Image 1 (spheres, each protein chain N blue to C red):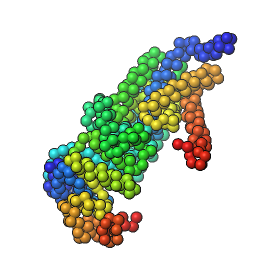
Image 2 (cartoon, helix red, strand yellow):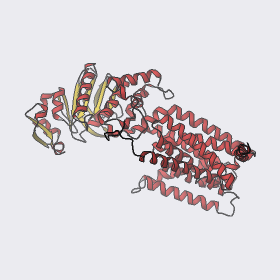
Image 3 (cartoon, rainbow over the protein chains, first blue to last red):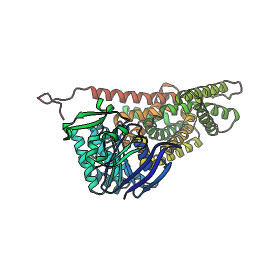
Length: 247
Length: 290
């Protein structure tokens, strides 16, 4: 067991943003975290990272967490290479007066190789494609050596080829024994990952993908659900939050 | 032979007097510290804060001159008053942070000018506004040397944390770095640099050595290490060139240095624009060469 929560409530100061989270994450799990913007996904991640204290309930963390943020948050004009960014993952292990060592730099390059970016190790981060930047941030989380990875909508803005490559990388990470919590709006993709956690200011559902009934999705997205033909996902029909269908 | 001697004489004439040699050393020291620190100020969007702090400490400097206490103490007191005033003004409903800073800085700068124009003011207060690099004492040089040592050591130790916060402030806590501490460290270095540099370069011109070399270096480098080095070199070379300009044209030293620093930025930007605007070589098929 990597982490478990029971009746977890979290939020800012005394104001709960998310309540009633009963979650278990084991090595090898790949959990899709579904919910609308403002539904509590980021607040849950920040609580698991220790940036926010639980307001109520129990939180058992048996392993370290690392976050993989959306690439849009990073400054693309910053003068750093892919290796520099991956190396940032080593900082949390260092005393305040220490600098990363050569061993840390080797670790960063090995992490970049693992995500398929060895040949781009010296490329400026801002010059990489969106998919490559996302994989650099995964490499940074790997350098943190955290068994739990929290990924914040990592597929947003990626083309199909980049998304497939990232998907394969995430599968390999779970096969190595890591547990992944992946915030996403893609319901079809979430079904394929096996386990889902649905949030809308409270936990709506947690379990195998078959908990994603229409009623659960409507509760998760406030009833704004539309049906679409979805041959690309190998299904006759899929449901999406209305605001995503419109884009 | 005659030309070489003339050139050598032209180069060495300005440094015949101990007064100008001390000024040269001061400019080199401030260039090293300002060039390196300025790179982080530029990436943390602190250029406006640097200018504001420099202006806000004027009443402290003038007050110290009137009372006959060390300018360093007066400047430090001025910075403290400015910080408290900005914090208080920032809590006024409907007043955003930039406006609060502008109101406080304008008020303090006006107060400083008012004090400087009183009949009791000692002569030479214009040196506080425009600098008096030729008037630096041995004590000022020691202070500048301490500043360089502290700034370079602090930037070395905090380099990776500065990178983390500058790259993605929101993700920094997840990487074990507290943005507030990094901001405080950077602002403390800025305050120290201003306190030391303002005596040589003046209240109005000191920001030039912090911002212009770093902005120029940013245009021609792709990594932080080379940018720090390039910025320091530009600051030192432009500072020394400014002193030559001052010596041979009779212009004020502080203003000459600030002017050459800004010219250095303009020159680098112009060369870069010209290089970028040059048409690329093309293959016979018309595709850009790679």
